[in-house]
Image (cartoon, rainbow, N blue to C red; front, side, top):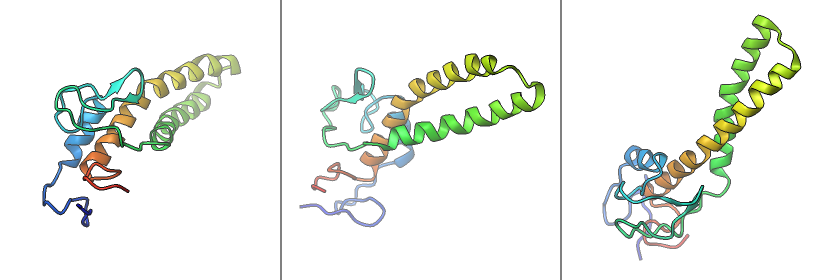
Length: 135
């Protein structure tokens, strides 16, 4: 049985590249090979990679992707909203017509990308069964 060592390496000594795995996940590709599609549908992670057959069924992204997505979108929208309000003070309907659709679009665009990056992080750091052990 493998156990996780400090820094995310398994006892086998294999080091998985963190940034590369997260980038592959961001592109919605398998964090192992970078070729196979990570998702089936909008954000449901496939059980196995269609290219390299990496087992992805035990990933546990849970609430992290929505949290990070809201964090990113909030940090993009709020400064822009405040800047527009400070410079031109538009009517409330203009704020609603501008910021609500933009926020919705950004959330829907970023959510699967962020989830892919989280799955890539878990794969690179041998988290949640990716290291051959059960949590």
